[in-house]
Length: 214
Ligand code: ATP
Ligand code: MG
Image (tube, rainbow, N blue to C red; front, side):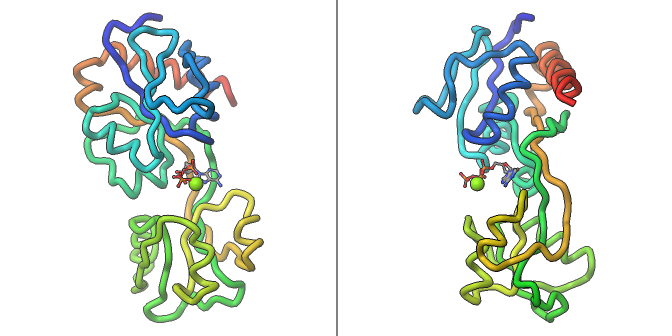
C-alpha cells in the first residue's frame, strides 16, 4: 500500500501508543522508533508520506480538529470532554479499555442535595447527573481524583476504573457504573474530504486490523 498524500497520525505515549502499535503494524505502518524510548515528537515510519506526532492524550482531538494531524487515536473520555468539533470518529479501536464510574467511600450518600463531585471528566459527569435530574457541584481536577473525598474536597469522584486497585488503595470503592471507555480513531473532517482515497484506505486497513485482533 502506498500513500499519495502526506498523512499525519497523532498519538500519545504510554498505553495508547503501545496498544495502537500492533494495529498500525497490521495496517502496514511501522514507526522508525519506539515512542516510549525517544524524546522526538515526530516519528518517521516505513512510509515516506506517513508521520506520527506524539502529544499529550488530551491534546490529540485539538491537533486533529485544527488539521495539524489528519488522524488521531484518543480515549472516548478525552473525546467527550473535547466535544468532537471538526472530527469524525470512524472507528472504535477497542484498545485502552476501561470504565467510567462514580466512586467514593462505601457509605457515600449519593442522594445528597448539591452533591460535590470532583473529576477530570466534567462534561461526562455533568451529563450523567443531569440525565437523572440531580443538581451537583462539579469540581474540576487534573489528576489524583482519589484524594478529593479523603481530604473533604468532594463527596464523590467520577473517574476511570480498570482494576479498581487505585480506588481500593485509598479506601474508596466503585459506586455506580457509568459507561465503557475505549480508544477511537478520529479524523479531521477536511482531511477526510480532501485526502479521501488515502484516508479511507487507512481506515479500512485499521478496521481489518481491529477485526483481526478479536
Ligand atoms: P496523563 O497520564 O499524562 O495525565 P492521561 O491520563 O490522559 O494523561 P493515559 O494515562 O495514557 O493519559 O491515558 C490515555 C487514555 O487511556 C485515557 O484517555 C483513557 O481513555 C485510557 N485509560 C486511562 N486510564 C486507564 C486505565 N486505568 N485502564 C485502561 N485505559 C485507561
Ligand atoms: Mg493517566
